Length: 366
Image (tube, rainbow, N blue to C red; front, side, top):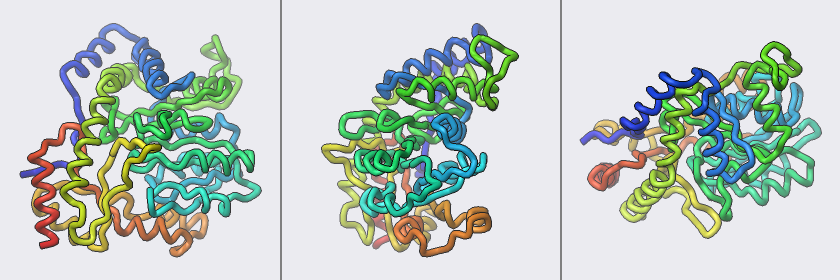
């Protein structure tokens, strides 16, 4: 049996929605874009949702709209995809990293305090693998230092923290619709969510070349071209309707893995749900000291795996070169990045597929 690490869905209804948008709407900023934004804002419980061309663009525009500029520091997690830092380093922002907690792989509020300096403007917690960070504590630390908090919710569509949905837990939230996420838009795309009128206005104009309101050729801020295509929005609107059901299926699949892999070898299971945390399992991750051996074994058996993330951001070659980061600076992040391995997880994974994955994992441990 072959079991992929992910399996993006594209139904006939989604294809027809895309075709309908092509036939009947403007190709950029068409009707489907605004319908998708309205629906996504309702899902998150925010006043605004602003669609953009990618998750990275969402982070960049949200950070800029929140007042960060070149020379300001943004603190995030190094155990994340590189876009979490590239989004602001690319316009002259300074990277800052705080170590993560071993219990949930997210930014550790206790470590965050020590990472803040006079140049720090914002904090960017990552809801890694669809498991929300400790937002109350992070927001409290940030508030005391007068810092902006922007959620990197790229992997957390629909996840909940203390009854509130990711994207509505800070000053702004940022999502990615890349193909392997819990929902996608049939290509690259991203979304910014916020309750802040000014942030929403700036993001809306910055994505559209910095145009002044009501004008096509007057520009009163520096902007970029980062609009979500109308066709992509049409697909996203259909995907969003299915997201709650898909997330329930992911949680059910996670329970199957939990029950069948508990106590196997040296495996450490993912952070677990609690009364405060309702994760969405963008990935189902295991920890093991034998990661590379397990990876080779599973791939030989036709089981897809992912190493997320093999090299933490601060140890990426360009970050070491530009900023002088060295091993040992973030010990928990560095340890976890050597041990975490993702096994197949997607909404329509079957029990037979899961049983085969479990059988292969147990076979590795004899």
